[in-house]
Amino acid sequence: MPENVFTVEQRDALQEIANMAMGEAATRLAGLINSFIQLSVPHVSVVRVDEATQILREMTGIDESVTAVRQGFRSDINGEAIVICRSSGVGHLCALVNEPSIHSAPETVSETELIFDVANVLTGACVSRILDKLDRTPVFSPPSLLGKEIALDDVFQAHGVAWQIALLLEVNFTLEDQTFRAHLVILMDEKSICRLCDALNALLCSL
Image 1: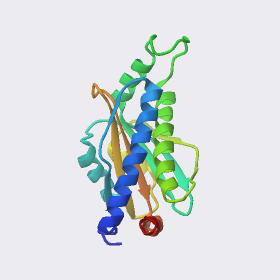
Image 2: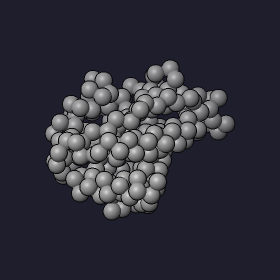
Image 3: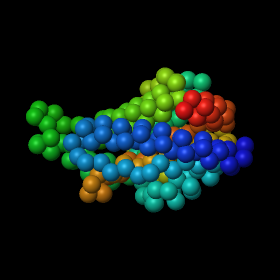
Image 4: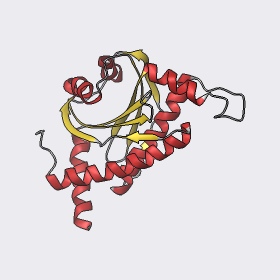
């Protein structure tokens, strides 16, 4: 599959859809943790999976241990959403969420519970919104923990990606004080990339 798999029009349309989806996800995440969220412009690349870690490292600047959660989705466009956070940031966010002023009840939230909540919010809002704009309704598999305090290089090894070429769509969500940043990575295989191109063409023709 060639690197320039999208036309300029297809890439622009996907970028615009992703921007809308990320905005909705940021709003939901801000409500979950009661803090203002900044979000980046989505990065879209078609990559070889064995290059994905290095490309992601260059995008994110991550050089420390991470905590990662994956969740699969399917329609006729299938893929995986992976939420990656610096492990130190998860601890900070957990402390913030568990401040007495945040909850009226005395119950506290564990780091594992919190990262699953964050992943559910980001994956649900982003993937559902993107596919909804393309007239698809995704079915999600249950989220699973890829690992806590693991190296970024281990994320894709633990994930066990079965394909060789993938669409890599990355965006990051950051607390205003920069102490927590979540990276949402959406991966699609070759067949789903082709179907995504067809769906984008249909959307562009309908405008």
